[in-house]
Length: 468
Image 1 (cartoon, rainbow, N blue to C red):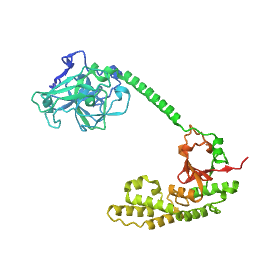
Image 2: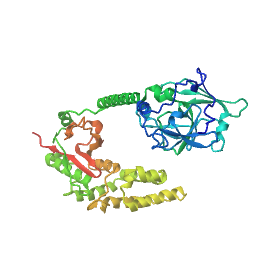
Image 3: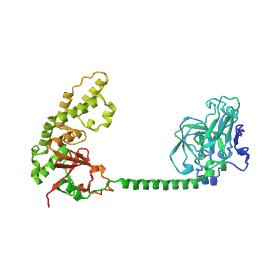
Image 4: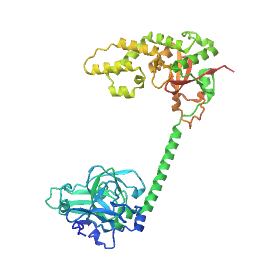
């Protein structure tokens, strides 16, 4: 066997004269020792060698496989991806110098990866002869071995006098601990710092300590979850008494929701159905508002006519379109504006074209034409991919606000996913939903319609009942 002339590089602990001076401290790789450390018996660079092996730099500057048990402080070791480190190493070079990734579950059972960085020692490890260069570059003052997993300072690299290389602090981010696995990194080169009983893994207590740390972390995580759940429970909205809601409206209400047909016109259908029931029970509420048509589709036609006769509604629409054309980044418009991507594709394209022209300096926009196209989109159903039958454009915030004003109607919209099951066990009594969970549009109106948004374009309604 060739003698490794780099086996005794100048590694000087702060107190001991030399780490390798302790003859009884061998890099034991026996089955019992590996079991204590929690390292698989087939670890290393050659799984079928019968004992853990590693790739060590020899005196002729070539690498060769050697048993873990022969490692000494000062040896230079090369790791390949998915290989287990056989000793504590100082990271000298890597295929990813700033992002060398390790799995250090051997220490604490935590499978989260750690990112390491190479130690700046002023040597190009791609140039043949780097071993001899390192031998003459300086020495390493290392701290005494410790099992402290939070240890921040490992020591110092001290370059030879007159070198252009600056002294470098050796930190935890520069160390590959025994038992760590190199992951998502093609290769790494390290200098053996600690072996045997001096390694971080051995000092910490091996597999038993890692298992205990994992259990402690699990207990901590469960405690954090329990505290978070308790805090969340404190912040849950509190249901209100049904009688309190009914008193505030002056009406009696049902204890549950009524489903609305998903006919492509669901929200208008919900408003029409709710108003029909309201007028049936309280005929006096019909006074002062538009006559209600005989069905939901005729109601949509009526709504479209009344909305576009409302100057404030048209002005609000124009302001929205001006913002889309003149201010919005196209990626945000396409990715984050729900009111935009439910529009017909040809309408979307016209807005996109105007948006791009505006940015190119062509700032002539036919807003009346855009508003007319929007009116047509509101009035005419279309085929939506993946959905049977024809579908109308959903009512947006501008439409609901204008409908509330035009029909002198209070519209309360609730969302199913905002009702936490812990606070509101199913089935939910609509009368118990507190005001903070309700989008209340035109709240001073006498007529009231209550809607539950179950999912996109599907609604349920909360209907009044006859006074007892």
